[in-house]
Image (cartoon, rainbow, N blue to C red; front, side, top):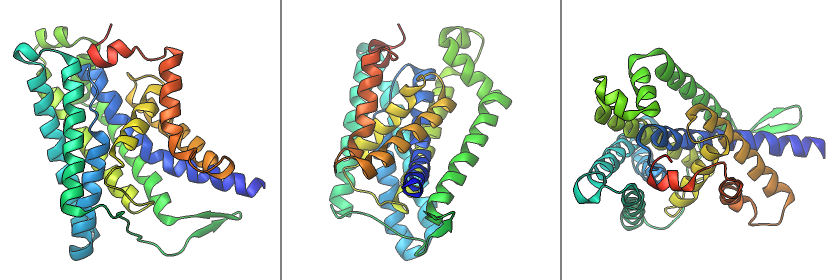
Length: 289
């Protein structure tokens, strides 16, 4: 019984590492641009589809490169949507949020049209490791290692580089940062690029872990938002911890609760956080209060 619970806990941590990668761009975007990109999950789906296509014919490395490039381009397009939504008569953050949601639907429709509705999955390993009676998939260990390495790089970037300093200045006060000569628009563009990069990597990791469906974008976006909101949308690094928490609860739910509860855990966490008042809903859709 104890070994079984430990196995579910390990699986949850390994799954939560992927959710943490999705939480980082959600909180980073909100902190720097006062808006939420609802296309993060769709970027992951697109990346998984590209990796599935190229990986089978040209190898995993080329598939990974193509997937990340596709998600970067999607992030850039989303940045353009954001910039357009904040200009002219459409200067309404709610329009931006809805526009990114529409863009996510377009991406999922694109994947459905050109890649089909069949589940996408690849397995790089056929055997599992045994440690203290607990089975660990080598791919899951790669997921955690990749996530921790990326979090370390992002920490150094945010707190040990000029770009990170400027980004934190924009998060604190965008107007004051602009008056100080910081290129606020370029910072916002870089934020979307980083978000697309992380979502693309997360999509590839999911493809090689549990598989991906063309319709998984909304679920992944909710998981990322719930993880980011759990410990505060203004703290990108703490959002990674939130992802681990949600992944752990989801894995335990899959093991001990009726079928169907596990997939609803990210949504449940998001609802509980919103009900508790930890997140200002008006701030999410209309800037900080």
